[in-house]
Length: 330
Image 1 (cartoon, helix red, strand yellow):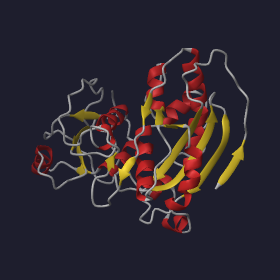
Image 2 (cartoon, rainbow, N blue to C red; image 1 turned 180 degrees about the vertical axis):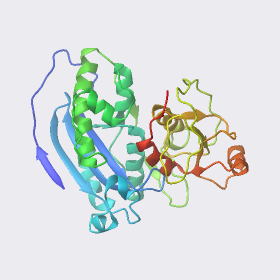
Image 3 (cartoon, rainbow, N blue to C red; image 1 turned 90 degrees about the horizontal axis):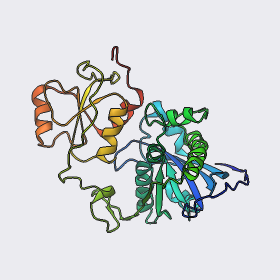
Image 4 (cartoon, rainbow, N blue to C red; image 1 turned 135 degrees about the vertical axis):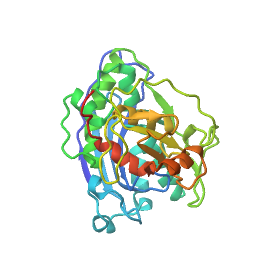
């Protein structure tokens, strides 16, 4: 664990009174993206009401299982073997979060992973609101090419030293969040705060329930009808089907089927930002089907079998999104 306290006084004039009094900028690295995946490292930068750093904290976490994509986060089973369990760090983690707004890049993912870990430990995370820096950048109308963390960092001149390392990702986000917060305050922009409702129970063999909120897991109905969203046309030609072991390429047609851990709309937005074509149906031209239940009898899964369409789960797709090959032509 690392600790550093550096408080800088700052009080912009006419700071909106409705703004929170403190923030906890969080990043977690995980074994994957699915509901049963675990946190393997966590970092928190505590910021005051003006976005100035108060201190920071980092810890490894033993997930009690395979660490997942080591080639991305670099944390091997050997490295994590002697790390504390989540139950061992839950109290200190809580102290870092208590009374603050949780800030993260794609905050719904970090919050859901944290909430599940606390539920497994039969505890409750002391978080009542979260703020997603993707949503904030959209509110501010920042001229970003996409909504990746590295693009937000580059916009504010923040240098990233170790991508996919929780401590450095949290530092980068904290440094990018400060000018974002100041810009919001100067423009009297409403912060896109979202309510956090903790898990009320956890069963390893069943879908967890979140509070008493309507809409099911994570605020959406996993099996309910979803209205279609008009999306911009993909500017790249379809390069064909995805081949196992290779990279996704811009222009590939991707379809989704069944429940997802990350909210479907957000997952589709990430695919589009990466330059992929999100298809609402599956055809012989579909490059890839993403589903967490390849044995389901949905029409998309059935057609994927008929056409020989490659299939990957949500976790694998999330990793593929991190390194999409540019299109050869627009």
